[in-house]
Length: 336
Image (cartoon, rainbow, N blue to C red; front, side):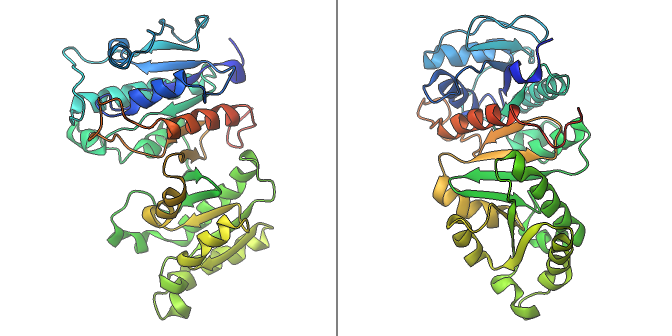
């Protein structure tokens, strides 16, 4: 078997009724793709072929893990779907979500075996997952479960910003109770472990406050006092370069100026709003804590434009480049 570093990068089909297959094909077929890297398109071959025909891309040859890779930049690993499936752009379909999960499961297993050097995932539809009876809030939790990762985090990168999240896809009313000392500690520690892998050996971390003015000494909430400050002090005692809690309306400005390598944000929109403001078309999502490399574009299925051929592939291009780069470095969570 080829080494992990020479193995192809797997690209999962995601929800085939969204823009994922379109931007994946555009990214792989474009000039911005990483050179010298091969890509395995994972999902039903007939669905990948339907997208190739629709958007005028060459048909990829078939391949399966363990077989020699064809003389082509991309090949299709046929992870079969369900009978009677039809590409219906923009439609939420339980069958499409089941296909997305099947492709993801196959990719994870192959990456764990070293038959894929990394996995880039096209977007899935959370409504479709729920309608299909799949109890999963998203990619991150499924990946952690299937790889046995007990500590994991979402990291978003775009432009000069890197943002790790303490909580992920939670209703806002549940965020404060989820910002516990244990959750804050895990986000800080896993960020510190990740930064050298990401090319930042100094690993300077800023912790964002949860409340306005970072709580204003307890006048506007006490989570900074009870959860954030104790863990920041403890991290410093362990030798980590951590500062905070810093108010959200200040910390991202300072990070853009280069004072920090990463911001630990308390909840989804607190971290993603500033990142997407400056890197909407080029942001990527990296799952930290996994023994495999997993990257995704920082956008969803975009059902409103699916099938029209107008989707912007730049985020997917950035995800391919990021995955290829990380696959060449030592993953801090993969055992030798």
